[in-house]
Image (cartoon, rainbow, N blue to C red; front, side, top):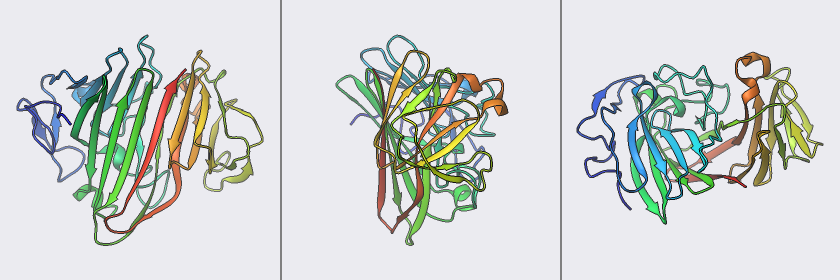
Length: 314
């Protein structure tokens, strides 16, 4: 396996021209890119929005994906024709004061509200690059997040999260592995809060018929239990619904002429979300189809849990 650049050194892979600053998470050093670092692997680190470092993956056939180290967040996935299939909200900020609103944000170690901050802390911490490779023209990068003073202040466990992102000609795959590196067990739940570019009036999802539902509309604190009876689920207004024990493949028609297959292993649940008039400036332009693990995952010391997501376009 090849590293991103010989100028990098593990574990944070920071070139000499990067300056280190402490931001957001007390007790952890962050890197800000000063100049672009590139390789022939189709994996390069450059400066993104707000001067935040991002990894750009480029396949031999011209597809491309952007992955910000802040939040370990994939923000863009373009096939060779240049069309971006993901969506970043116009109110998104790239200043580390809040998570990046769009793309594939992580929800870990908590999905939704709970004992710690909304959707956990993984989406507002810097991840580090630990590996990269190129397999037959397909670039791969692996990011890592470990516990820190900041994370332990709200969730007092040692852990390692590894996040592998693989770009192919017409697909984007991710693999998330959570390992308990503590000497005591812990539990978590998690999701990938995936934003797809869409025309909300034409967007629809197939594959959910027969699944148990937890509908958070109108009261998110007391979701209504039910069963999905529709072959094709649409977004006629505000939508915030959890689907339990879903099939390992859903089909999203984004209303823009694309059908996207959303396949997974070990993400047992799914969430559909569109804020409707709560985000009047952009709700018409995206839908969220999220792979999730709603029930708690219990890990004993040294145990790991892995889930994969595979997005592909016809």
